[in-house]
Length: 129
Image (tube, one colour):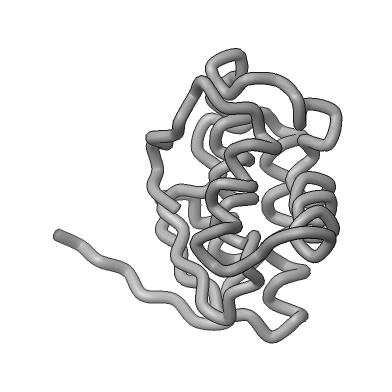
C-alpha cells in the first residue's frame, strides 16, 4: 500500500474491491464475505456505495488498506499507513495492524512516528539516509 493512493476514483468501494478481488480469483459469495470483513475492519462499511472521488484523504488511506488485505496475504507492506488519518482512524488502523499481527501476518511498514513503532513492532530498523 503506497503512502499516496492512486485509485480509480470513479468507482465505489464495492466496485473497487470487486475489481481487485478478481486479481486474486475472489468471486461470488466468498468475495462478498471478504469485502464485508475488510470494509468493517477499516471502518468504511457505511461508505461502500459512495464513489471514491467523494472520500477524504483518510478514507482513501483506509480503502487502500482494505485493498491490501482483501486477499488475506501472509506478508503486507504498508507505506505510512496512518498518514492523513484523524485520531479515530489512526486507532482503527493501529488496532487492525495489531489484529493482523496476532493472526500471524508479517507486516512491514514505514513511519516517522516512533510511538506507532513501539506500539506495533516486535523488531524495527532505523534508516538514517
